[in-house]
Length: 167
Image (tube, rainbow, N blue to C red; front, top):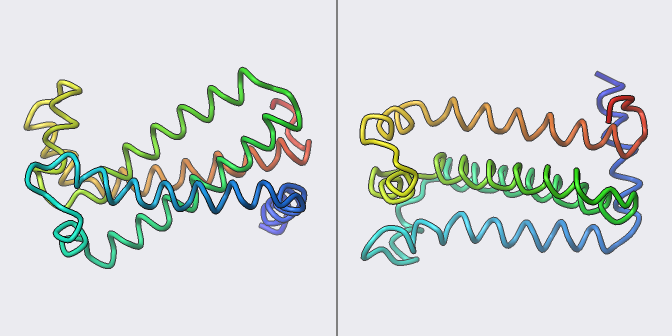
C-alpha cells in the first residue's frame, strides 16, 4: 500500500510542479462537472437547468464530483505524457477511450429517471429491457468505472515515474 501511494505522490509532484497542468486539471474539472449537469438538460424534452438541479440528489452531485475529478486528473496526466514524452498515438487513443467511458458512466450514474437514458440508448440501438437492466444495476457499473479510472490513473502514474516495464 505504501508503494501504491508513493507512485501517486511522485507522479503528482512531477506533473503539478508546472502550473499549466494544474490549470488543465481545474479547467477540465469545471467543464466535465457542468457537462454532466447540462447533458440531461439538453437530452430530455422540456427540461431546464433549474428543474435538473432540483432533481439531482446529494449522491448525484457527489458522483459528478468524483467522476469529474478522476477524469480531470487522468486528463492532466495524459496531456503531460503527450507533451513531455512525445508519445502521440497511444496517449491520444487512451485519452479518447477513457473520456468516452467516463462520460457514458457519468450519464448512467446520474440518470435519475428513464427519460434521461431513453434518447442516448435509443441512438445506440439499445432496447427498453436493456435500458431497464442498466438502470437497475447502474451503481455496479458506476463502481466498476470508478475502479477502472483509479487503475488507469495508477498505471499512468507508473508510466510517468518510469516504473512500469510494459508501458
